[in-house]
Length: 404
Image (cartoon, rainbow, N blue to C red; front, side, top):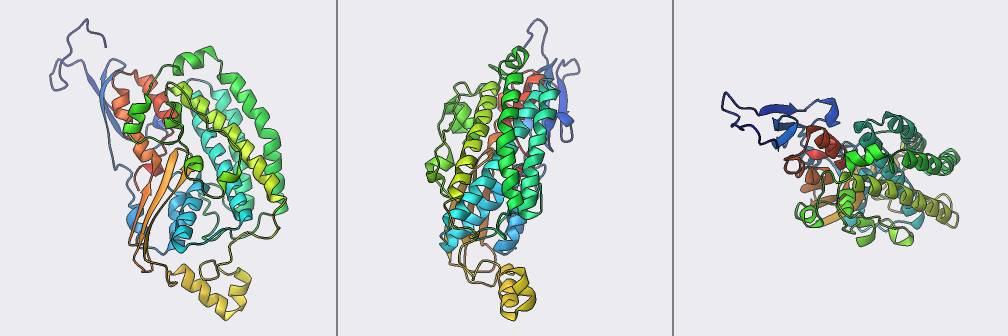
């Protein structure tokens, strides 16, 4: 801060501080966020983040819906990697019902979740580039997010809010076109990612704008309960896929990249390396599928897995089961479960209390963006406004995940 002139309080008519409403629809915020900042020139003196600005009562809505009807709600949390949300919820219900999944289903889920992670990281890292002035990298790599959406579309018919899969597996097996598109992506994406890194990673301007900016210590990150790439960028080696494996992640060989200083540059590097690791995991999953029996895409749990549509249209028993499952009339055990997956931005958890009714008694979503975002305003104090914008981009806060 420049101390060559007197600094007055904001209420003083001679005050040199300016109150700036950053958001809620400012294009630089990349989402519906509201931050009320006090500026001294271009430097932020203090700030307050508005909590609850986009509150949509997801948890309360979920508590009035049967398990099957909650999946579309999870799409609207982190909509940049919806399938991870969907499958995290399905696995939570499967834990409640004590359903064991076939290996082939686990591997198919891993493929979809890792594609989602790549799509999520593409958005974050290209936007960091965009906010530092590198529009070329943003436009170039974004086409591969489109290719991932085409794979999702082939698997489930949807692209962004996918509602993909079911409790107990998938609604249908992957067809040959889906596998062909996955193989095409695995062949073409690494070269594009390498070019993206060549454009930014050792770029002098990019390094000057990101290295040493918004540094966070591992102690502070842990105090704020950070998880995901933000925490790993500070040097903490924590990944739910390794610490508490789900969906047979223990069968895969991959590394968990960590940074050192927790600055914007380290966050960029961690996410880039995670994309390489995701490609590696998908390649392994595709190889493992070759030794699995074809045609298995769900567990054998007729009480909870929806019968095929053809049977529903032509068979009275199937129609009855379909109705009972969708409307929540199948008995589920009274229990309390927590299940977490490694989302695009960190630990995405589902805390479910079931009392035997047709809807959850209580359901809490642990949204990593909401927890990570608590630190944005304190971090911004003393920072230039332009750096605060890049900091927000590097945190990859998804507005839909802020308030459930």
